[in-house]
Structure formats: structure tokens, C-alpha cells
Amino acid sequence: MPHRNLIVLDEECAQRRILELFSVKWTTMVLHSLHQNGGTCRTGVLARSLPGCSKKMLTQTLREMERDGLIDRKVYPVVPPMVEYSLNSLGKRFIEPLELLYAWASQNSEALQKLTKRRKKRTSTADAEEGPS
Image 1: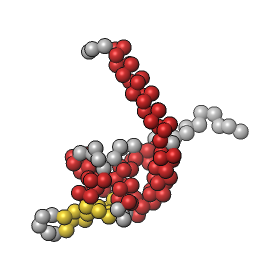
Image 2: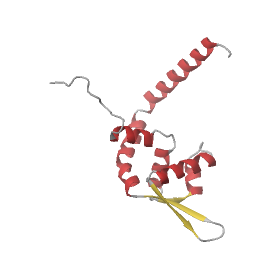
Image 3: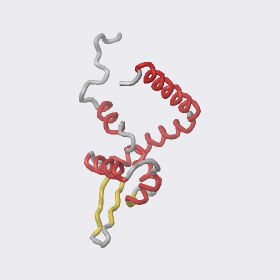
Image 4: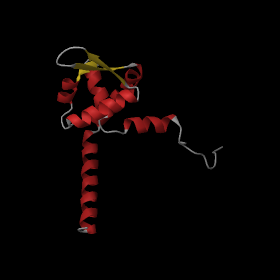
């Protein structure tokens, strides 16, 4: 029997927390890049593997991911300074579902391109209808 007034995703549920964590554009891409590079790499390697991500955005994303407990940061006492980022146990546990999601995106890339074009068209049409501010 269906429940009435069922709260599907209350404010503290795990599903909301995971979406909040991974709704940041670069978070999943950094996890994917770390995974593709053996789980650990330096900032420069990450930067080269993420075209379009500014140095500032990468730094901010890495700090947030470290704060959220998805990656570990290790600073080596050398000159010039050397920093490595690694997937920790929580970050590693997200790799399997992330790779499934990325595989789905690859398999549906044509449909996703059409969706993006429609969205851009709707946005530009809405902007044109509003006129200048």
C-alpha cells in the first residue's frame, strides 16, 4: 500500500548528501583523473588532465575534496614544494559508481549533446525575450 505524504529525500538523508558532495562540476572529474593516474598524482598532472579547469578552481576543488574527506593531501619537505593528492578509502569507494556513470555518459553522448543544444537554445530564447536589463 503506498504511503501518503511520504518525504522521499528528507534534509539529512544520504542521497541528498551525496548529491551535494558531487554536484560540484569538477569533483567527479578530479576523482576520475586520480583514478586514471593510479590513485595518486601531483597538482600539475591533475591540471593537465582537466582542460578548462583554471588553477584557482582546481585548487578550490582539491581543498573542498580534502575537507570533505574524499582525498588526502601530502606535502613533501622539498624545494620547490611538492604536493600529492591521493584517493582515500571514501574516494575509492565512489570510483565504481562514478565509472558506471561515465560509461553511461559515453554510451549516450549523442543524446546528451542534443539535450545540451536544446537547453542552450531555450536559454538564449528566454534571454532574447527578456531583452536588455
